Length: 403
Image (tube, rainbow, N blue to C red; front, side, top):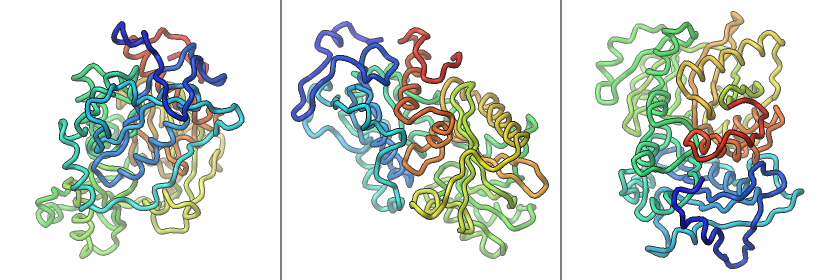
């Protein structure tokens, strides 16, 4: 499982106020602890969601007995040239103290663009990492990625890690490039019979020209072609408001996607390889299930399992599995979003192979409803990454399914 022979010579470094462990937590399925680098941050509007997800993953994996380095993609190590081993901290957590859900502060508001420009200037290594982080990632058995947006979900971080031989969770760089582009994803799936709203792409530098050729009837949903957490999302009823909505969607330099509005109920379903988790319904009094509704406690509720007929539940889970398969996501995570319209049909909106892992995120909730607690979900993602890289024999699993 280790990449160099000397990495097992001194597997633990004494850390002040933290006691190293020489065995995994009782609820771990691995026979020894791992070094895991959790990479979060990013210089995009999902930065706060990423940092919250990363903190939750760090706590969960340390609770299972692993030595974990918590890395912010924009923050260099405090001590330059420090031994990478010293970044991996352990903690002893009692059986009763291991939470079954993500444990981290909520990401109530996204950062502003001026702050993100400063963050971007710190990510000097290939535009995705601060100096000094790569040696820590290379020292890990596996990197757990919770970097979203145009650094993580676009495949940029994965491409850099591939170049340096770092094993990481989640899908390949190529899959991320496809799924990050909502228009390309819709095109692939529509060609294969998956129902999705009709759409029109408006270039970020050609908004007036792009809207001149718009033939979709209103009302419309406008959002970035690439991005997540519903940032930059607008519902538009008057065509005169479309230019402003497209400008908002393009604020981070991406093209805008204009979709015909489909009324109905919102559902999201998590998948992990061939296993599809429970159906979650997001319910809010707000006009849209937007960033504030997603990440502000009390702004929305989630019902799981969703109030659907057995036939509807089976159908939308089959659609989720088909989307996961058609997009080549493989033996790792994804979360698919659908809307059930008045005509009784499920319409696909988007998929995310690096779903959020915050205390209000749907993916951990979807898994928990199937009996997979958050620490085990995180460890399962690690196991699958190592198995896929040939670093771990097929065997331990929290799901009891064939990988």
